[in-house]
Length: 231
Image 1 (cartoon, rainbow, N blue to C red):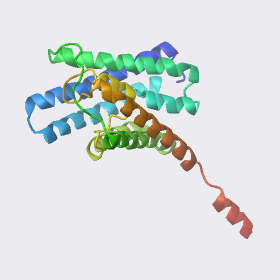
Image 2: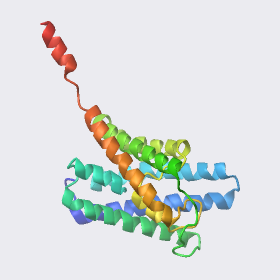
Image 3: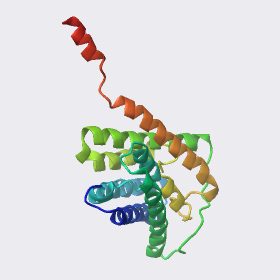
């Protein structure tokens, strides 16, 4: 991003991802400590996640682009909006930030720093859900940037709130966040063994959205040609 050097951008990506994961994990722990109703706990987890996304993208977007997601960084690297030589740094910052976010949440709730999750999230429906969730996320980001850039924080936050509820996987849509969530044996966790299926689905969904929306968001020429033919 213009005006900010790479070290500052990497810190922004790491800090933003840490705050995102701390919110996802922490709100899940808080929700289950307050209610035994799984639906109500998910609602609390959902609203906190959507809210923090609006805040983080607004605050860190002007610094690093506020990707907080290796799949999103990959798309911007493919489109050359992110220099490809910087992709590895962004992904590492996001992964490290995500792990630190889980540790921070555990510290706040007096849990062990790391607890590998035992929560099963696997199977075709889960993988398809992750593909759909990530496809939608990338589509919202690309279309938002194209038509209403200032609304992107709200678009992403609202989309994730919706995707928590219409996908069977509760919309991880983020390889770094999925990895971080494998390190907590709480409400938001995922077994480490289930990660590869999620990662593949997320990357496939992101790339599919990139190719479709790269075409979709370009103005067509057919109407222009047709109008000229009538003159």
